[in-house]
Length: 316
Ligand SMILES: *Cc1c(COP(=O)(O)O)cnc(C)c1O
Image 1 (cartoon, rainbow, N blue to C red):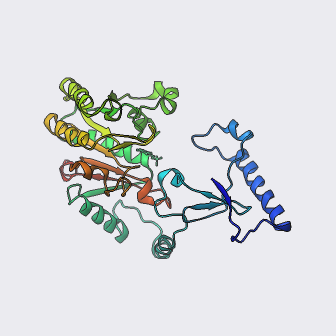
Image 2: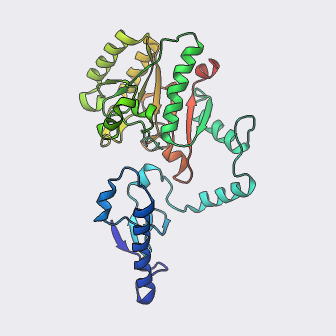
Image 3: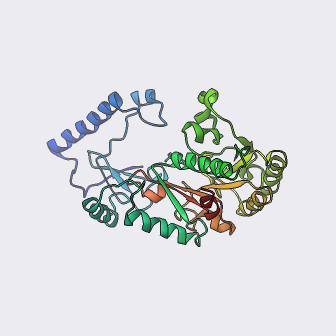
């Protein structure tokens, strides 16, 4: 959506506007020459110009001509508090002047501890440890590895397979794509992928049939299954395909019955996006792992977190 920001600093009059139009075109051309844009057929932009963003405020992004765009997609679901948010900017500037980064191997610092404590409290201290990473797909990789590794530490070395739902999206690195079921992101890499079991989704076939299909898989493969990974309540990349919370309650029971970990990928749905802080709360269950990214960063910095249950942590 486009409209004009007449009150902005770059009203479209006189020489200033001409220069700004050139700035718009210039950044577009330079970007096409130098930047490989993600999830984009670059040829498309030989005809359709990129949108060059000069600045942002709240829900709006502004180009160099002062045109404004409503960021209705929240910059791909990351931006929960608006662009250039005054409170977040202030906190980040304070943090920057105090400590920009210190490794969490052997060191620790207040910001990491306080965030981990607050997230643990939000799970009633059921998922008591937070593992920090940089983006959503890394969080998924970490949860898959932690699940396998914790079984291995308990001498259950055969538990090395994973299950995911039809039309699932869990990221695009080689491990995460193995539990993703979107052909567009996956087909080209087929020879590189370690495929997960793809099970009917409650968003497509309803809760009863989807639970029946998962039970059938568990009855066959539980001895080899490390974990099942789901996007709780909404399969966002599948076109915001929604399903009833009762699926998660019943899936948790199934995982307990057969000894399979439950990984909740709350990268898109977490941080209040479905009305509760974690989408899983609506099913009154806690998974063994929760992956967070996107909203937890507010769109400011690369950040993701894997929350793990105390039993998992104890296996290490
Ligand atoms: C976006 C997303 C990912 C991947 O996150 P990135 O930060 O883009 O790597 C994984 N799972 C879900 C459910 C997502 O929406």
